[in-house]
Image 1: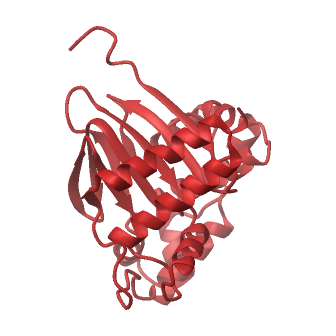
Image 2: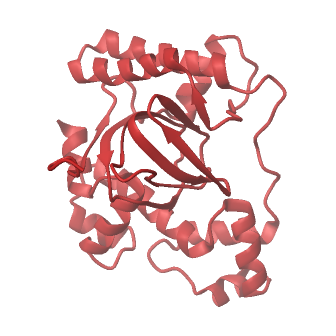
Length: 276
């Protein structure tokens, strides 16, 4: 491997015209994403190398030129699939924005669903790259146009036909109640035994059922929830040290470690990228 090519870089930024829509440009070699979910869609263009990731229980590989298309709230990981790592650009559009574009295309109501995760689509790849380029130039009209054009192309080419649903069945009452309890006790969560007792089931039964519905055991789900809340507070201008305590992390290094494993950059870089 050539000297210097192992350096990792990552830049996370907010789209200049669409609140809640984020962009990530990164090159990773040793970085590994832990099991996590995004409340948004994930449209990633691999520009070089290979990303290997677990997705909904399957191990997938996305190579240079390919797109990785992930639906919201699907558990996945991410790591280098070759020694030189991978370089990619990612667009994270909110469910609301994707629904708006789908409605403009005349699609029926509901949340669009993408059944295939790794696709070869050079035209969509060019459009996704243009989203990043126009956002970097700061031209609001070009940036908003590129964003919606790219989403429309991905919807037309890769969304499921009307009538296909990717929605899971409703969670059992005990699992839903356990999830609600974790949301309400972000900084002081119960033990697994206390959680199971509160919702009227056994610890192992709850652990198995929770993982089956949400793709993560309760403790990992709580970590993801804390990172999502940390992002919201950072966006509101709260200092990282205060965010750590308010989101339930033991200290700032604890926040930083989990934040980078899920978001791809540490909290400080996240804030700088979104305010630049």
